[in-house]
Length: 314
Image 1 (cartoon, helix red, strand yellow):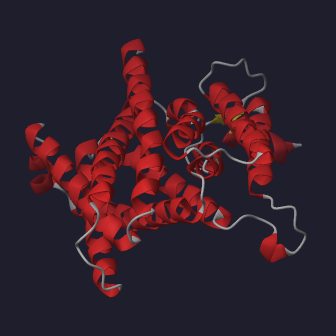
Image 2 (image 1 turned 180 degrees about the vertical axis):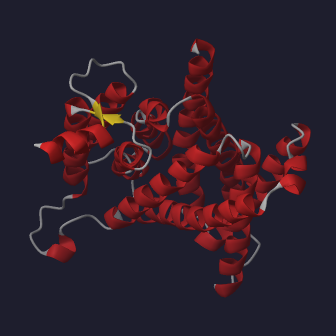
């Protein structure tokens, strides 16, 4: 239905804008505090916000109705979210410019589309393949250092971003399959609470202090509201009304917003070749996801099972 598509794109736009700002404010906070301190305050704030919203929206009652299978799904998602989120913030912490991190993160929509094709049997075609190739080429240009030695081939943090994209893809596919039975509020609360518990463990392992600068606390409060609360919630809602690949059409523009935000907030810009590679990833992901959304004419696009059958017959 058209109304459902409108809702899906609306939530995707809000989520993309909120998520773009998460890069900026999390980077600003981690410039001042240890990652364990950051995690405790970040997810404490987001957990409270999500809990209050779920209570206001009368979604907490669903906890008492959870089946054993749904509990297993939530526990599996908790593990995936810890891996995904830890690698995400670690990459932001390591890579100096948030825009570079965001451009490299464009591998997530590519992997998400591939996951939709392989796992969910969604359609694919030559346009998507071309767009994916552009995005991968752009990511290579961004991360490439010009060195020939394998250890120095890519900038520090590149591998972590790719790991994050992989874990995020698996998580999104699990959410996509189960989001209609488990409310976005419950999924987000599950995510945030487990990340808070994990952050507390790391906090005591590293022997950190609860005392942090006021400026860091301000950035954490803003970022936690925009990111773990608003962005994740609205992206989950977009998955309820749209295919995961269509939601990623809007999300693919995230790098441009992060680029602008990083320049305004930190006064930083990627190196010329990184900027070129970043724009290439954005174009590639846009081409691929626009085709996935049916907004670019595709010829000979087949469900993967049919394509495999034809290939086997030949």
